[in-house]
Length: 506
Image (cartoon, rainbow, N blue to C red; front, side, top):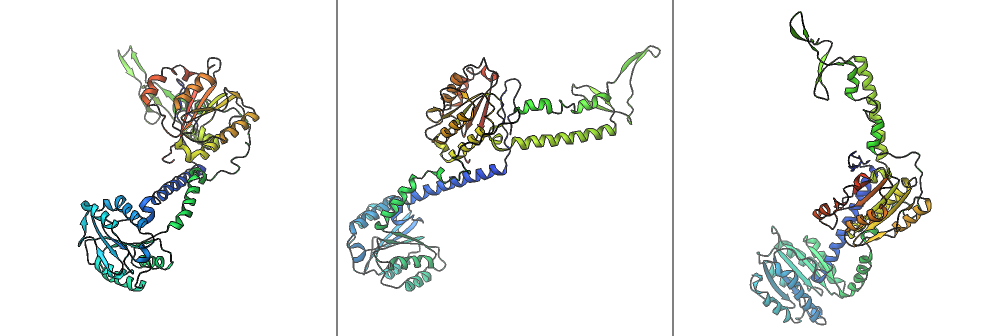
């Protein structure tokens, strides 16, 4: 809505009317923020041991490792390296562990689940793994499912199990009946499509989780990840129609006023509709006079049916008479004024005025925050500037735009006339802005005041508009001590408008 100026220092209070379009824009920004979080989550899951084995859940984990000839023969070294990485990155944070390898026969590191204080034994066990015949997964399950201390079971298989999927599923279901045991199945470097199908079906039947890893597929996934990382989160944000097209400049049909200025001619007081103004013709002060014949002071008497006492704005008490026709007419006039205010509010809540308020000054400097935290919102920032340039700047005298991150970027060295050519040039410059760095607001503010607004004594109609999403780099103590004195007289010479867009998301 419009900025309400104080007569003393002309400071501004910005109120926002949340229109349907504004809500849609905010929803789009939240959507982009969610995409960024999902993007970060995917990247995290595709790193190190999580890429190979997935995310291991549970705090008492049993690890079953396939050491068949097919699984370990040609790639034993890489397999051992990945298992060591799994121990160091994920299993070291568990409370209890149990390790068992299976080929034709089974071999366990410990007889029972053990705490993690002896991880060196686990690392040594991994380094001593050797290929051992077939893939007797059922025999390994018979051994490990008797250990009821475990709440998570991880199966790492690189070849087709000796038993069918139906036999394995039936056995696991029977042994886990009434027991909370998370089954995590992993296929590691399988050259055949059979093992992934068996393990995936097993996980689905028992309500577990399935993860598949193949280095051959990682090349393609790496390519996809590389392309995906080049996409900025802002690229997912839907752009308004013809966002990058030329401005459609509009010429306002009247000079804009601040709400304070508008109320001076359209307010209740200006229209002589304040309550005291309406009651004044029929308001009388109590009278006290000395009556000589009675030799005492006599007060006027209030007739309750004709008048009532009413406290006046100066603290005095008045005897007031209200005629019903006058009261009815006053109510009708108030109703008309309410509709006028509603139209004003609707007008203020549309397009650029919803974001910037009403730009009333003839010389305007716009400060725009393009710090890296605004990367998600650059389209929204550009669209906000477009609306301002199209709707409110064509009838101004001079303007300039200053963008600030860590560094300061000024569209022009000094303020230039607000003709159509300059407005189009400013818009093309806005489209080229990229968000980076921190939020060096003080340098931008000093640049605006010392360069663009340097002739403040010659011009009484100047405005400074700031569009930002957060606090500046400088501490507020520094701002107050260094700049409040610097600007103590400037506030009376031009308006400073602060537009704060919230980004948590926002």
